[in-house]
Image 1 (cartoon, rainbow, N blue to C red):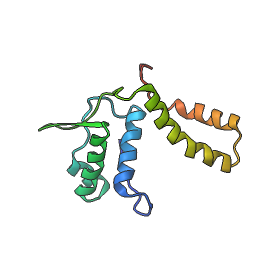
Image 2: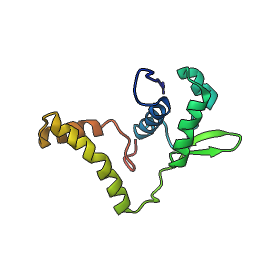
Image 3: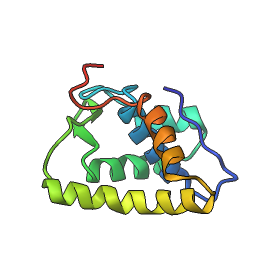
Image 4: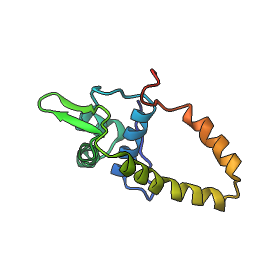
Length: 131
């Protein structure tokens, strides 16, 4: 997995890294229990301050995406189902509303959005799909 940062972006670098790690996990590029690069390794790879990488990793640990194993490093956490179905549905709706609002403003029809989403779904690793 090649990480990259856009220093011209308004999105803070640590948030860019958080998004890239989450997406890599969702796409199956990182598997549960797989070790991530150390803070120093990743900082060197993307040419940023190690504190920036540490901040990204801390956020990912805090939200349960990564787990620290003392003396071994950071690893992709196993997917959890700590949230109830209602809480997970609510979180997903909170993410969908801005996406759908943007699609409406861009002039897409509901059918066009559904087709685009269906096409994008194919690039992700879903629980229980065996990929």
